[in-house]
Length: 138
Image (cartoon, rainbow, N blue to C red):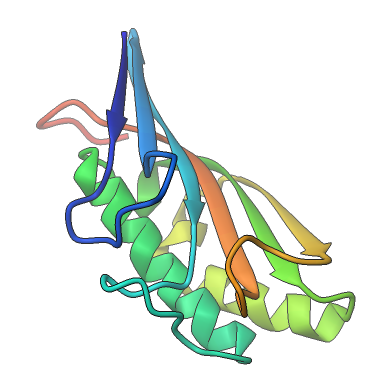
């Protein structure tokens, strides 16, 4: 069974859910790309990849919370940055490392890309996480 979840505290996505949870012994959540939009759908940090990365991490936390998980239970992530400059990618990666997302440690890929889905968007992160059973730690 697949449970599709849209975090009620985030801007509703147009044609996808924030996460999909599949139960197969261990519950996993497959999260849609977290984007730098506020709850009203406004771009946060226009022109500033570091500020956008901070918003993306905050939104990712909300997506995880909506499915009963958190940054510490992320198994893998893909970090997309609109840039071909390693300094810009590194600055975004520093935000990722400073967050609890790096506590795993989990598998991650950092990618420089040509563009992302929203006008002015510079950062997006997708993730897969374990949804822990109540009262358990991993």
